[in-house]
Length: 382
Length: 179
Image (cartoon, chains in turn blue, yellow):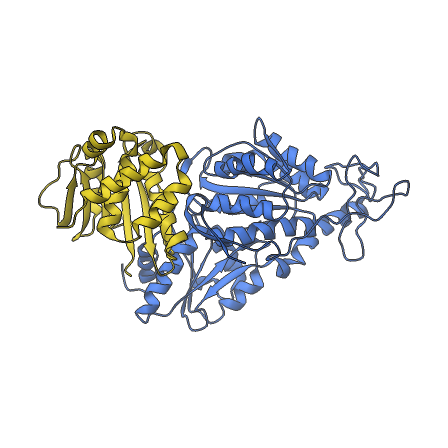
């Protein structure tokens, strides 16, 4: 079989991957730099037998996908920072009610409407902490069209496996960049389907009673079983409760089902890390600049390495600790004020050896920017 | 091959972005090369100086932006003034002689081509200026083959306008005779 090579934007790679993963329903509100995802879906999703809705705003968009997911469909929305802010309340609702959904946030400069057409990675902490209350979340990122495809499929698989919203944290640079994409064969990447209950109609179905393995089979809402769904703390029937034991059990379950499976969800790439006294840690568009520098300096005999993170939440602290253990200095390359640096400092044995190489002016950090910062860290001046 | 870094610049609506996508897509789909294409967005996309960045290489491309192009195309004076200082000395500079007056001190292989005049006089349609420009770029850079570009144009252009675009490409290709 001949390989299917395409030349597409990262946003289109994301949209294609969503269809590959079995997306059936998309609701969204266009916003730069994410609009190409909705544009592609508006055309292709109906041709695939799915439904596309343009909603009146981002609040309606996330609520629509949550409702559609509950009826048994694979769902997604796409937005950027301002829209992602509007989605935070319903994001918490999806966490609490354990409804699988994928939210792509193609990051631009913020806060507020910020820099609509420029790159940023300022929403890492918003993805983790943007919605209120103690909870866990899954957030993935990627730096190439090919990896965006793979990680988007992962996002749908994690959403179904762990019954959780999954955030795809893309950025303006990778979202808009056109490059080569090899679309995997139909069976090239495994996809996870909806886990449905085996309880038959007329028999009591407990929507929030986890199986022995912690997973909760779903019943299509409006189908065989009548049950309650609420953002309040709820019992195994889905009805509100303030019983401290049940409240404790539910919050424990919501946090543990993600954190205990952090290893399963850890995705990363590594380049020359074994002999690198200076190790870069990066992700998304910034990782492209980091890798550019690493490959260039290696040719000149300079021992730089790169750990590219693709799973940002749950943050892979163990992995980062292990990969950074031989490095004399760790330089986190990102386009914010050190949101992933904070986590790296928590992870490594000697946090004073972790430094920030950043850029926050809406421009992609360049290999030269990173090199200059490394020189300063090494005491060599710029 | 060396890494080719092309910047196509002009004003919004002239089709420099489309031309950039076509040459990059040709490299990837027909020449087995790596290519990335990006563009400036924002106020610049509506009039003013707009640009499309294309990197073509047989090696992987990581950092996707162009700081110093070795091929610069300018279709307007404004784009020329803004971007010519970034051209790598000794690089290739292609300008539309109808709209751009260049300084003779620029260290570049300079080609002042009557692109606009050619498309209006020989084709009668200025809308294909970008494809005419592409013909000249392909001839002068030899980074992709003209036949492969035409394949991509065929896929991207509505049938009714295909001949028009193919003619425009040939006109540009013929204009760019090497000195």
